[in-house]
Length: 136
Image (cartoon, rainbow, N blue to C red):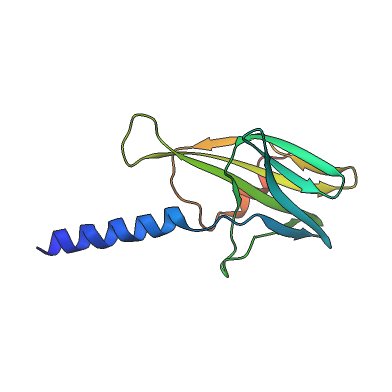
């Protein structure tokens, strides 16, 4: 009986996480960036600049501890982390996740290389996910 109740509560919690609204807007040094989609692909918009991320839609920005879009500062450069999570095609209950950090440089938005992983988590990420995929 206890296992059944626990399993039911876990399924309810997972469902709530899956239905949570993805964060799509952040502020990088006073400039608003917004995630949108173009032909089923994620795009990060900053005014006139549109950066195609090579990731499937839907995607979202990694949250901070307060639930807002996290902006990490490294060497004076603001960075956001964009993630896309989808169910694994053959392993029930498992997910495939792709993450890309995007930094704002003098030249504009620059995306890191994609970082694939086997994870369903879209919560708080380690700073290395924001900084480690770039050459500094």
